[in-house]
Amino acid sequence: MPQHPKAGIIIVTWEKREDVLNLLNTLKNLDYDNYDIVVVDNASTDGTAEAVKEAFPGVHIIVNPENLGGTGGFNTGIKYALGKGVYKYLWLLDNDVEVDSRALSELVRVLESSEEIAVAGSAMYDLTDKDKFLEAGYFIDLTKGRFHDDKKSIPDNARGKEFFIVDSISSCSLCVSAEAILDVGIWDENYFIYCDDVDWNIRFGEKGYKVASVPGSRIWHVPWLFKIGFNTAYYANRNMLYLMNKHVPFPKRALGLLYKELSILLLSLKLLVSGDYFHSILTLKSVIDFFDKRFGKFEDLEYIENLKKNAGERPYMLWTETLARLAVKNVTYVISAFLSLIKGTAIEGLRILFKRLPPDTRLKLIDKINNHYLSKRAKCRRS
Image 1 (cartoon, helix red, strand yellow):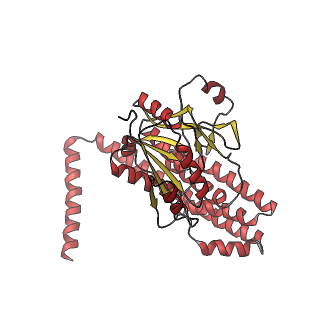
Image 2: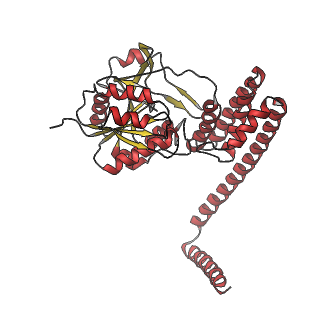
Image 3: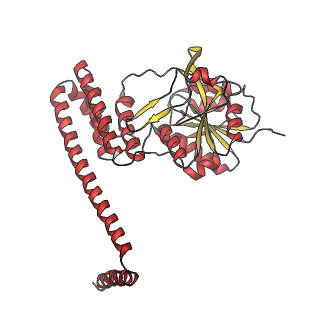
């Protein structure tokens, strides 16, 4: 009889056939005796699905009709697993990691030890230098749009601990209670990629659950090296603003968004001066799209083609024009926020005043309001 709770392992991939095959090979060595594996392929063109079917016939494969990003890919796997109704835990893995034989059992052990802990993640090490520690969870300062992993203190302190509580765990290796997912919900598909796992962790915290980093569970991943590209110039900036706007209360939200926007503008200016005109303007576009509430997958391919063509021909003019558009968006946002604040304050003031009225006066007002709306509805029906 199996000794471990049933776990569903979910791997999302796109155009990384060899990495996925390597990961599946390392999963063979798990000391866990009760799991299924689901690979969600985001419409890869490198033969990933066919290769997995041939080499690992016991793995369930779901092929999405298009690239849904990490967000949509994990949601596909999560919905499938929850629909099966047999898994107590879901283990989300990046497609290019390697896992230690005890990686899953250590995560489940910590999850089983406390009803408060709904999410548990692994300590990450360098795949190119396997003794080198990289990270073990994050602490978040959303008012400035910052994450920090406290690398200096975690490795020494972690040796004597079974787990420690953090704000967020990377989806490179994230194990979560299926029951808690039903309470919190699946990933927010406004992200597509970047910040989506952080948002999920924050939502668990807002529901009263704890997120644990488990040093005894180890994975290996190629180190994160910040290199400006489409994803970092666009998704990382737009989604961080969205994350802050979603979770930071007013008025800290307004100050935090201003702080983060200024840092993005500074990055854009540095890229412009260095001659990277395309990414310089794209960073400004990411902020504009945030204000315009354009989320999810970026699909304006015509804009990208025009930007590639024009950024090199008239970069400073195009950058100035984009900055001017962004300035207009900022003014509009400030006015809208100010009006919302006035409206909210006025409504709250009326509520307080209403509560202080004598009961008979309140009843009379309620009757008048009801009669007013009933008469309007009757007129609309007659017309």
